[in-house]
Length: 319
Image 1 (cartoon, rainbow, N blue to C red):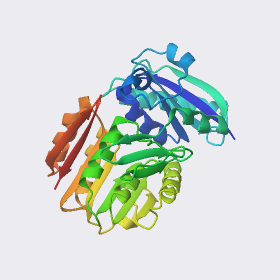
Image 2 (cartoon, helix red, strand yellow):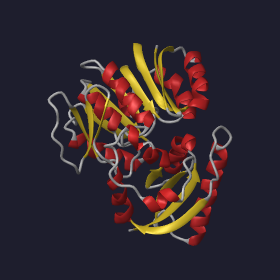
Image 3 (spheres, rainbow, N blue to C red):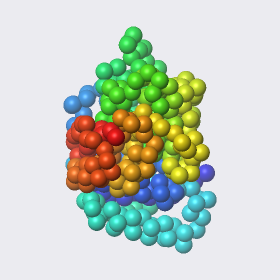
């Protein structure tokens, strides 16, 4: 199947919000090319062994390329393409009301499915974070250390490789926070990486959810690859649509989304937590951190920890 490739020139601060907007508009996948990740590679010299030099030289350090993909079934005609581009421009305008978005230059092209689904794999390599977590792409074999908590991930068409600051902060918090037998909810699970981490570090039950059917498919595949299907469930929908959430009281909820969605979710998530339960949130740019903190406090959460990494923040709170 062929896909429409739509590229938006933006900035790092808008990456999470634009990714979410693309998925809301029905994109079958999102690629993110941020020169900072490559230009700063001396901080993690084993993370990259391939660089698209032609693409890099055409971008400034502050510019990010975000590519989304729509099948020809979703956009069957030139008129439908123009309508989708209009929706993307409107989404960027909405995001610009609370985030810098850069030039918002939009480019289009056609590509075959196998081309875009596999090209990004050259960039994704094994890496470690936290105390013992070792993230390994599913197509690469490595020899683990005895204490490694191995997470095998193929993001496919879902967001969530673990390399982004927001995901890595959430994973480190989960490793510290999850206790054996805990019930954990991963809201907006993407590739399922956070739910898998929770299961691997001892959770007794993990429930993952996402609005995007592609993410749900990929998350279920990753759950199976990591051997945690016995404790991990993956559903499509939001908090009000999933029967598994009815009457549930979790020990911990993790939501790596964007600030506005976290603010909206905070009161609803509180109703799903046990007394003393934790709410780990990220996908929060620094400019919106105080808004999220205020919303959590207004909803009755106690702020336990705030971590900053680059332009992003993660917050651990409890009721």
